[in-house]
Image: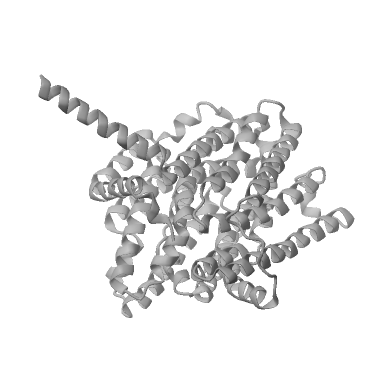
Length: 499
């Protein structure tokens, strides 16, 4: 009995130690806050869709689309600063100058938003009239400006290894949006949501501005501006083109289909994308570390790191989305007006899944200063997508549910090329079987093919989708164990993400 009590006490002590490690672990804290925030965003998506209904939700979705465009027109400044602060981490004087110069450059980007706003109210944009944007554009522009500064400051703080303030910035806006959901509906609700964005951004900029890790003692100079913009130019083209792939699809659908149909599309995309936001949060906090590790000249070490990254990130993405696809019809019981989006959601979920498939190899190419190559690949993919979606809509006369197939194909081609050029740098010689294996190994390919077949055939039974999720689980037991080991290591050694 004494031995049993001693054993139980020992187990309890270990459990308490583990709980303490988890609660004081900055990686866990960040991911937990992001998971909580994404749960709120997921809930917000339902409530906003329900309270606005398809017409007003279509307008709100177009507002968010415009904010996406504002965010993308950043000339690669934040991305460039992210990489440069890692590369010059030992030179404090240089990093201070880079920070000061980047703040000035972002001011120039914000001036473009002001000019566009003046142009819209002076001359107008006929296409925008369809979405009745005039009452909202001032607020949208303010949000765009604040977001540019917060994105830069959050990047700087992240490289300085403080992820608590980053978690605040990424969480405060969804929390405020959740609060205002219960105060109004239709156009009044949209005004309140925009004010929630503004207040959240102002609170974040104050928090970042008082961070002692950010030095404002540097000197703004032409040399560092040139360095940031030269590196940022191709990073800007790469990021702009890559994110414009899905945005161009949404834009074409918003143009050729009704506001209600665009609202249904945006609803499905929002939910599918929300599933992967937690993984995006993880990639955000480890990005500086990845750049640092993948800049190595040790080919074997790089290959091991790429394999580890892709196993943890992509395998988990597949598992999450197959589960959500299976459960999606149950969610729609709460929103019967969106019941017809099941086929659309299935296609969008698989497309979203394919959009993350280049992770690991794309990061490696950036770490090896291949920004020009990445920008060419992304720009080519963007053109391919635009042509493909227009063909589906205008030539083949397909409905908006099937337009997304062109985007899925685009992401497949982009990932194949990214893997090919990454392996060329690593091993100089690329065999087709190795290329296909790295693109989508058989244990991921079979569930993906099965799920895609369900979508094309149009048999959306819950049983078949559950079978697909179970098939994925059975084929990836070994990979899931590796993911569990990675999580354990992050709990025990949170400093491994530091640079």
